Length: 513
Image (cartoon, rainbow, N blue to C red):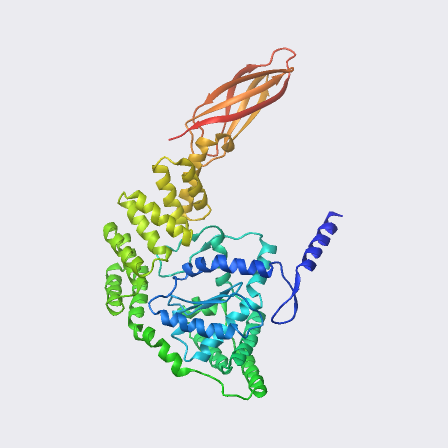
């Protein structure tokens, strides 16, 4: 009967969650409302950008150009959302869309495109992912399967902080790294090309784009496999469908289709002129991963000499100094990065750690809190907990250690231990069980240490009810190891007809080293 009731409840929920897809016109399951999608996109847009290198700021005109092309496509889409388009400072070729129309493209993908129409093909494809609610549908599946958002690792390979994202910010990281299904990709190709045609772009650019992706996928290029191909797998089927779609669209619309090759090359001229700098940066990242720091430093200095305005270069050099324990130098270098981009979490995080190592706790706290406001991470939470504890603010320290403890990493495990040490002193009863036993009239208690801390002493309040009369006392134990159970004498003995009616014990104090 219960199984049938649960089934009926689930069916009712699914029926209520059905809605018409505004792009395809199909009736689909939707457990996330349109208003919720917009809110999710707005909340996750900045944290998601942070996980992918932050915004590319050196050439503001390039971002304005991408926004212009994106807005032109958004204006003819089937769904009017608060669309936004940014260029991210990441060498990995990738593009992604969050629910609600928040879209990003990496500079690493822009340099692989040949013309404006191919850019329109990429952005149109991402617009459809948002408009057709593909991300929202994946969220719905996740809600049904797990009901919660897991911690997510930061994907930046060139970051020393491949740490774990805390709290709700992990949702955006999961959404942009998800792998879309074949149907979602085919839909985004089809309707994205329709948007291209409505905006006047040659839909055939989607064919050349997909052919390029298929060829690159066969080459097993690591950057592509870690970027666009992971979330948007290319295929010959997509090439064939795009060819058919282009023919249909061109047959129905006789016009001069825009390709915009020269215009695109003009807008990419500055970024392309700095290609050697970004190649040197990528080489430095690889060298750093192989612990070849001296060679990495030479490569990053070369990158700075070619493009002295790029904040990522200074941030990377600061990371090298921090890892070499040259803390004052790291502070100066992180500051140089922040002078060029004051909205990227890593520079605040790194400088905060360097300040902490030099005893400048207040400056460290300010930077780490700013880093957390941009992207909450285990590393920042653990360090803020350490600073709070050193200042005597146990409550704040516990809060930070409790957040960091959610990560299954060595740092998260250390934070969990720090949290338990604080909470054990504040709430010892939560970490011990106390049960009474009677043998030959002698009342004893079994005390079990459920914590991960070895304790040297505990104080235990005991109350018993014997023949309607309550008796109380406090006894102490000696050392109890983590996970150990000990039996303690209470000093009480039942006499004659006395009967133990109830017993309760609570650990009220615990000492440990």
